[in-house]
Each structure stands twice: as C-alpha cells, then as structure tokens.
Picture 1 (tube, helix red, strand yellow):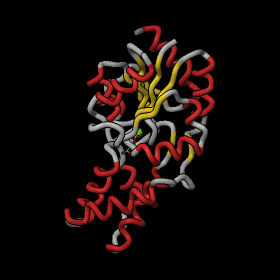
Picture 2 (picture 1 turned 90 degrees about the horizontal axis):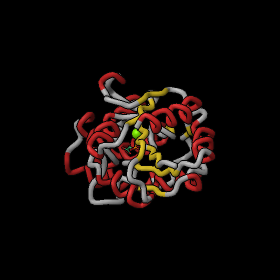
Picture 3 (picture 1 turned 120 degrees about the vertical axis):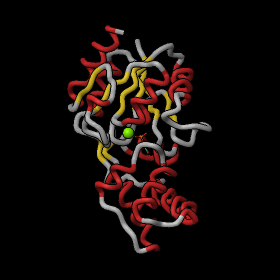
Picture 4 (picture 1 turned 180 degrees about the vertical axis):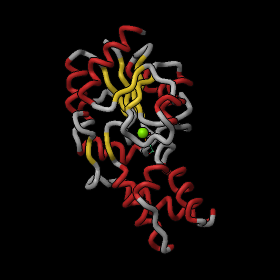
Length: 216
Ligand SMILES: O=C(O)COP(=O)(O)O
Ligand SMILES: [Mg+2]
C-alpha cells in the first residue's frame, strides 16, 4: 500500500476551457479578453496568480486585481460545463484503488471549485483527502501542502503526479518522486522537468506507478 497524490488541473481534468470562460467573463467589464491558449499558460500557481498574469498580459492596473479576482472566483466556484477528465483518468484511478493504494488531491485550485468539480466527476469518493490552493497559508511550490496531505493519509512517502513546473518543484521540495503527465499545461519540455517517470496516456499510469513505487 502506498499513497499516490495527484494534481488536478491539467493532470486529472482538462479544466482550462472553464477557467478561460470564467476569466473572460470577469475581464468583460474592462472590455478585455484572453485566448484559451493564453489562459492555459496562466494556470498553475493558483487563482490570484492567474488573474495577475492576465492583467499583466492585458496591461490592466494593479488596482483591478481584487475586483477581477472576486468576480472570477464567484464564477469559478461551480464551473464544470466545459471541463472533462482526461481520457482514461478515472478508470486508471479505479485500477490504482483496486491495487490497494490510497489517493489524494493536492491542487492550487481554490478548495471550493476543487470540491465542486471533484464531486461532479465522482473524484471525491475516490480520494481520501483533498487540499486546495487556499486550504493552507501557503500553496505549491511550497512543499507544505504535500506534507499536510501525507500527514492526513498517515503516509511516510508518496508519489506526486502532476503536469507542471510548479508540481515538479513541489515534489522536489518535499523530496518525493515526481511523475509527469505530459498532456497538461506545461511551458517547458519534459526533459527540463526532473521526473521519476512520465506518461501521456492514463492507461499507462497504473503499471508505471507500480514500477516507480517498486524502484523507490
Ligand atoms: O489553479 C491552478 O492554478 C492550478 O491548479 P492545479 O494545481 O490543479 O494544476
Ligand atoms: Mg496542474
């Protein structure tokens, strides 16, 4: 039995289209918008950083951070219509659970929308714990969220599975093996992100996780 901890956006769920829609709705009063590609590139360090990255790209004043963020968070809370699990991700979680592993989510997405979207796709019942970007005083890449998740699970070690630079940095800071999902919202090539293993198809994940756990 081992603990396997997952990132959410860009790893289990392709949620960028919902994040894009909520962001553009919050930018609409200022007659600005971003492309889906841009929005995808802003994801990874939590909602406040997403909004400040969008403002920087659009040259919108710092004084607009709080109103845009508040409006964005309001719309984000229940945004699931455009989100999809990556193909095979839910089935892979069931295989991992059937092999006796404990699973949890560690995401920079605020815990409100994280819980809502997790319940919508039945992820919540598959997970023993879930920490979001506003659950603690810090968020990824600070390793605290992984430490807190492991403490909740009573796990001495774990695998961390994520899609981004932030996830790689977090795993390294927490000194746990990192498994990279290559189809998410990364900016840099996979070679630039140190990883114990990488995969682009969730069907490969259960066996790959076993191999990494055995080699650790
Ligand atoms: O909300 C974000 O910025 C990123 O979310 P994630 O940590 O699940 O990738
Ligand atoms: Mg992610």
